[in-house]
Image (cartoon, rainbow, N blue to C red; front, top):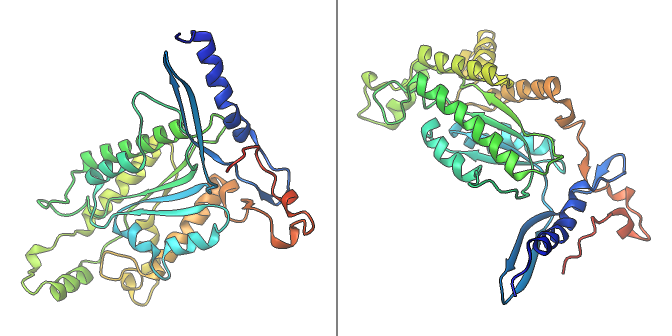
Length: 322
């Protein structure tokens, strides 16, 4: 006998009650938090023969700081890079996730974004690890001198960057609980380029390379950096203007841009350090509650644990896992 609509609705409410309890759970401890378990899947099989309700939970996961971009993001996890510094600063607070793709422009970045920031149609509400901060750092490859496979027109670049922002925002709306704060998106401009260093690097790596094959131009890269700032202004988003910051820093450096660029295009540890300082200052100005020094760590310090009854130091959201 088929179930009536009222009974089906009541069943769904009962199934979702544990999730509602989890989302609302807050630790009262002043210096740390016990993160909730995330509900991974709720499926209901309602038919004339069967009544089945299956609920499964995924284990604890930290909220995330996602860096999305091209090779300058991908290489940021090297020694002295921005990614490793962020992971150190946010340990036990946020998982810093590398989503950098060497050689990518915003056209290809859009295709990746659809996979790593999926939008469901029709919209569904599914709870995933919360993305607290997402940086979008493209432009270095879009600015390649045409005609090259990586080249993107200025108009298309601005349109793509707008779409990337909207994808991340919609993904956040679909995968966060209703009382969860929205993701904070930060745009980052491409850094300046050194044509002399780029030419020397290309000549060393490609014996047949000729100066007329140069794929970068300082003025064109600057234009794309300005476009990033323009999109950020239109979207009401903060922006880290690395083009300006490194250009100014290089004017006082003994080696000029050579101190901040490894090959005329990618960053040295000193270059990433400039990004680190600019990014941390931006976070302190725009959302200080997400700065490393203000965020609570996950789980208590060892000497705050109740040694006789350790389970009391880890309040559970009420989900029994087997």
